[in-house]
Image (cartoon, rainbow, N blue to C red; front, side, top):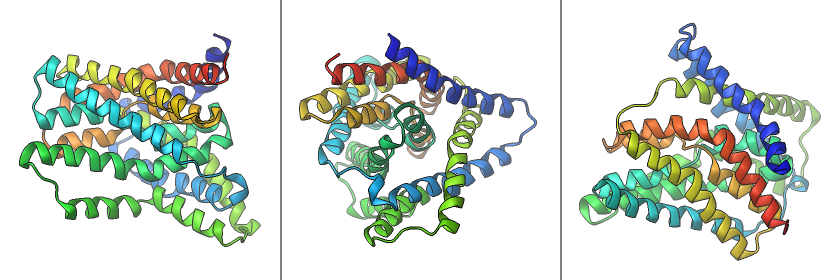
Length: 317
């Protein structure tokens, strides 16, 4: 219990920032253009600065461990399949609806929530494992759901679609910053102070601004139609996925820090990309919007709890 309360105490101020962003947007004094501009700044400048600086110094990075990716994405696959089965048996959804339901159970808000919370709850040592997951997350999960949807519709998947997805993911500012930072680190050079210090200061702004952006974004959705499906999707996201990832991490013997990092990412609220995908395929927009709101609200408690339990069990306590 003390571990949970400690993690809850660390995370609470950050979720309050989400509430602040929500309140600011709902007040009507900040137009949508303001939140869009702030989100662009966070995605394109603040968080990339934090991650580039982190990855540019190999001394800050732990050894690469493929088991970390297997634990996280293996847990995602288990949860996605479970989501398809549940959504078909409970709600009678077709193949496309099952795919979106499953995506809602595995696509976390890793950048805007995951990076700030990992930094405050687990410390800077957790950021490299988180960055490793972020690099592969969008490519892997978007490909998974695209294959699932296309197979449900046409019985096949386009290689050109995969290449297009991969190109779009690699060129996003967050992933590009991670990859270019790692490439710089391999040279053995060190960033000069005149560059390193501005990056450090910009990185410090990333966490609070990202969380305010999350709150502003949530104000656009609200709880819409399809509450039962959205609530079931939330349970899949906040309960089933963390358990699946934790189980694989334990089975693979992943170290304690890495185990807590992947469980934290798995326990996060659903990301807005799920809503974008639901709009793209014109299905479950209401339930997905409901899931975004519910999962963000409940994860304020469930994420610190999941991290505390993963640390306690992982250490044999």
